Every structure is written in C-alpha cells, then in structure tokens.
Amino acid sequence: MSKVSRRRLITGGLAATAGVSGLAAAALLAERYGLLPPDHGGAYGPGATLTYAAQRVLTAHSLAREFPRSMISKTPFANPAKHPGDAFKRLEAGRFADWRLSVDGMVARPTTFSLPDLRSLPFRSQITEVACEEGWSYIAEWIGTPLGEVLSAVGILPQARYIVYFSADPHWWDSIDMTDALHPQTLLTWGMNDGDLPVPFGGPLRMRVPRQLGYKSVKYIAHLTATDNLKKFGKGLGSAAAEAEDPYAWYVGI
Amino acid sequence: MCYPTDVSTALKPTAPELKPLVPVPKTVIVRHSGVVRATHWITFLAFVALAYSGGEIVISHPRFYWGEVGNVMTRPLFTLPIPASRRTVPTRYNYVMLDQNGWSRALHIQAAWALLLAGLVYGIYSLWTGHFKKDLFPKPADRTWRAFRDKISKYFRRSPPGEQEDHSYNLMQRTTYLGVIFLLFPLMIWTGLAMSPAFTSAFPLSVILLGGRQSARTIHFFVSWFLLIFLLAHITMVAISGFWSRMRAMIIGRAVVRQKRV
Image (tube, rainbow over all chains, first blue to last red; front, side):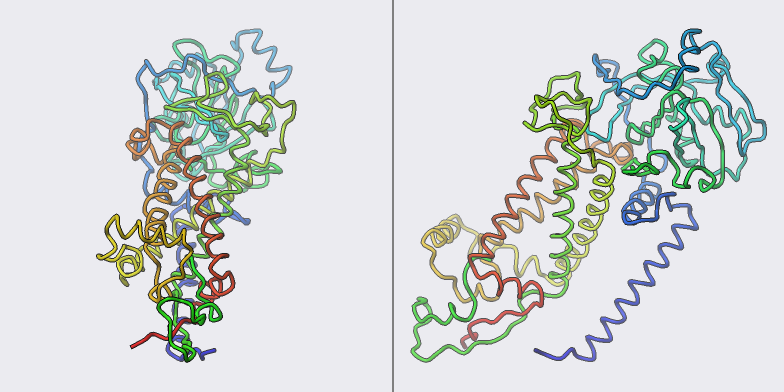
C-alpha cells in the first residue's frame, strides 16, 4: 500500500536492536545480582524472573503483616499432607523426644539439634496469615526459632546463597534464598497458638515463610543444607514443587 | 467501534450529512498508531490468558469470602455452583476436576506482567503524544449529560456515525475506554497485588484499604467479570460496525474513510 520509508526502517531497526540488547543487558544484570530464580528457564521463566527480581529489588527487607490476637482464626484449616511414614509415627508416639534437625552444607559447624536445643535459642512469636495458592487463608500465632538464629549458631559461611530444607517425607523439599532465610520472620516453628505445633499443621517442626504463599512453609522439617548452588539438588529447579509434573513456581511471594 | 465506516456503507447517499449526488471520494488515513495497535493486541492476548488461567485457579477453590481470612472451615460469602479441582474443597458434586493450578498460575503471572508492561508503554506514549487528551477524554462540548443522552439515543435509533467518528472515538467509546483503562485494569492490578504476601509486606495499606486479603480476592473475581463483559460488548460493536474494516484498522493501522471535506 505504501512503502516503508527509510527513516521508519532505521528507527524501527534501532528500536529493535535497543530492545534486544536491553533484554540481554537485563539478563546479565539479573544473573550478576542474584535475581534469577532457579526455575527461570522454560516457557514461564520470564514471568517468574520478573516477579522474583521485582520483589527482591523493591521489598527485600519488609516485614509480613502481623495481626492482633483477636484476629487469630478460631477454625484454622490444616491442609492435609501425606503422612510421612512409619518412622514418623514412632517419633510421634515418643512425643518427638527423638526428633532431630540436622544442619549441614556451607556452615562452619554442622550440627544436629533436638527440639529442646532449638527452643533454647532465642525465639520469636508472631501472628501471621497462611495464604494457600488455592485462595483460602487463616491467621495463627506461630512460635519458633528464627532460621537466622539457627544459621548463626552453626556459623553460616558467607558464600552460602540458599538454604535447602527437607521434610521427613522424603519427596518433599524446598529452598529459599538468603534474603528470606535471614529474614526475622522466617521461623523454624514449633509452637502454634500458645501450644505445641500440632502434627496436622506441620508439627513438630515447620518452616514458616510468611512472605510467601503456603506451599513454601514445608511441614515436618528434619534437615537443612546451606548451599551456593541449587543445581546440586534434584533437577536443579530449587524445590520438589518446581520439579513436579505440573510445576509450581519456586518463588511465590508473588 | 460502533458504526459502519467501510466504503460501501459510507458511500450510501442516505447518510444525513452526505447528500451530494456525486460519489464521495474515499481517502486512506492512519486510524491507530503503531504503539496503540501493538499494546492493544498484547493486552488482548494477555487478557485472554489471564481470564483462562484465572478460571483454572478459581476452580481449585470456588468459594469466596469477605474480610481478611476464609477457608473451608469458615462461612463463605458465596460459592460457585461448580465442582472443585481439589478434594479438600466440599462441593455439592461428587466429582473432582482436573487440577491445572501449577501451569495456570505461572501463565497468570506471566500474562499479568505482559499486560502491566504493555499498559505502561501505552500510558507513557499516550501522555507523551496527547492521545488521552485528543482521543479519549470527551471533548469539552461533549462533557454534558445532554451529550450522553443524545449519543445513547443515537445508538438506539441506530443512526449512522458522524464523519468525525471516522477519525476518532465517539463519546460512548471514550467513556467506556476510559473506564476500562483507568478504573477496571488498575483495580485488577491493585486487587491482584493485594493478594501477594511479599507486596503487602511492603505496602500493607494496599490490602487494608480493600478490607482484607479475601475481600481483595472477591473484588478481583468480580472486576474480571466486568472486563469479560466489556470484551464481549467490544467484539459485538466491532462486528456490527464492520468487523474486517475495524480489524484492518487495528492491525495495519489504516482505514478507508470519507474524504475530509474542506
């Protein structure tokens, strides 16, 4: 109909070149400043990367909302989890006296903690909301040892970039970056609403990451590993959920 | 959007302001700029992806609540009469739908980013070039109830469009588009972000002002219906006014119009 003018061709070409090199530069910067999530590949990688990078740049150190005691849900919903097996049943029968949390990887002093060991560290109580990715939510008081306290007790090494956490259920593991690991509200939770943490809610020990959706708060925590590289775990995508057949994002602060 | 402007109809001598006996010469104009066309289609694709994946997310918990919290142990505001894709949600159906929440969530977030970025480009461009002022805000003479009444009655009488509508949007289009651009989409983004625990940690007012996390989710659901209704009305109007000429204008940018009279 009409010919593309030379000027338009040149400006169009320049814009396209600027766009492509801008994207390449952004990817390099994201890599350099640790803003690439482990599941950044694949069709939905760009969205996951934008979300993670934006949250890390804008909201890295903010505190999750805490609520007054009057807002604690009278009927919290314990999302059913697969029972982690016979060994767990035996530990439960012994009221978890023999429950152990082992911490290893990039730490100066790999250590195994009993529940009383954890309770002897400084602890924190907070009233926060659990929001499931399905849409429902409840508020509870969570009492636990900040993950940061445990990590400093074992002498976390400066090159550690992620904490990988494993449930007593061998198929259930996840990981968070150091921003969330050292965040004061990230708790290894052993108490709920003034009592011990009930098994349906993840007792005896649950990782509570209140700035992310519920599925990052893995139940029955038995093992932590500090690492500089998530590629060493599973398929390298950072969590069992991210490696599932219908995968869920690794970072889910949204 | 609303009236026929393709050549055949435009040349009909019955149109009130077109009474010459000689055929009116046609001209080709640039109807929509490149930025408007590109962001329009990105928004369209992103919206379709968001609506579909949003539906998939909803069926994992087709219950809605008001306030901060809500779960299967609390009373819902309302429940959709559909089966759920999760066994833990009680429905009246003895059937669990296929669970596609994982990839649906990933698509939802990615499409939301595409829509947000397209919206930013469109917004900056429109402020820069005066597109909002020139083409979207009603003209000073049209900012009266009477003008609205006249325009609406013209729709009902199905009277053909004035010549200025070959070049820009009419009053009803302007009002609707402004509502979609400055009210519905911002509300959608706001209520979406109000469900993000990391975003609300930094900006707690974003969710407090809406009355809580579950209120934000419920509003998000309703506004998505308003947008779907807009989409259907928009496509209907395009179809009535000449689907291919309108599509051509929004795809390659050009439209054949009555020659501008001096």
